[in-house]
Image 1 (cartoon, rainbow, N blue to C red):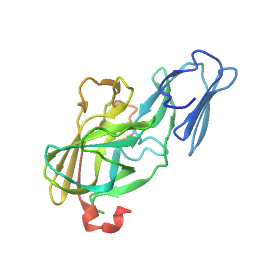
Image 2: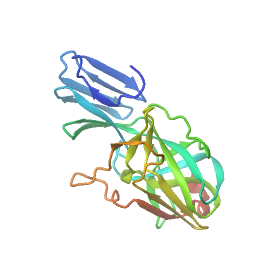
Image 3: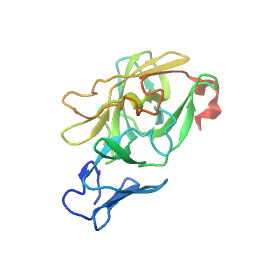
Image 4: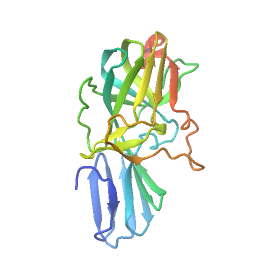
Length: 240
């Protein structure tokens, strides 16, 4: 079984196995032991099926240390006010039962980086993406599309950080996934990216809202704006 795993699993048969996106999910022949694996390890849970598999922002595995993703562009781009840049990010896979998380799986190798200056920068999950100024690129089965709307300024940039932990996840009729619209403001030394609650396109449906509440472990998840000094101009060795 390939493609995306989203939805309820283990409902129709006792044994179940899915492999894809660098991860695997299975129930044993008795339908009682859930096994979830990615490149960082495996976990086994005794649980009655079915369980729900849902897309999650890529900040939960292997460590919950940041709510920020830095989308690095494969080619630097000159951007101007009112333009929209389309990019894509990997997603984590969350397995849940009765709204309780059982396991989280990474779908790609996780790297972190410092965004901004050494003093006031933020740690971010680092991902690379091709970009488009016209139509959204085609996402993989465990990826989401991100619309970066330039609200102010113009400049040559090599990437954008944003708070994906505050993003709503949406889907279209073709089951492509999207994050909330991100509004980006630029000047010579500052980049400001605000994660809105708005869908990037009309007609999308919500599939996941930010998990606000007492169980939230990421302290910055309630701060949708990421404003940083553009330290990679001052410290070129941090481009990495």
